[in-house]
Amino acid sequence: MKLIRFGVSLPEDLIRKFDRLTKRKKYPNRSEAIRDLIRRELVQEAVDSDRIVAGVLSVLYDHHKTAISETLTSLQHDHHKSIISTTHVHLDHDNCLEVIMLHGRAKDIRKFADGIISIKGVKHGGLHLTSTGEGLT
Image (tube, rainbow, N blue to C red):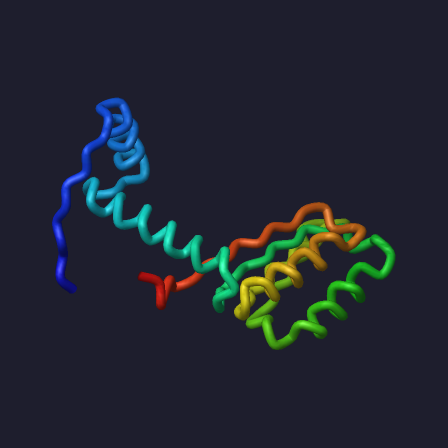
């Protein structure tokens, strides 16, 4: 891969803050920190579109709520083509954690996640989407 050098002019206070961030996140240098910021923005662009993405949905719920386990299972079966894997953990007597790995069109993954998170008895849910950024220039 060919590297291209370019110059960036920044206000002094901004570069100081950036240098502190670079150090705190343990980047070896500014260049790697900037590359990471650019990659992150390209991935976000892909996730915000209707491209193919990968995702992780985490859901914490009270398994005593009426029919919640059956509802979660039914929704997962309805979207089986998008689900790569599901992990279920019993945290304590009342609470379960499910982590669902997903792959598919961004809008379909979001719709599935919203449906799961909105189920009565779900205490907390979060979706993290990512993409390789392939095809973005």
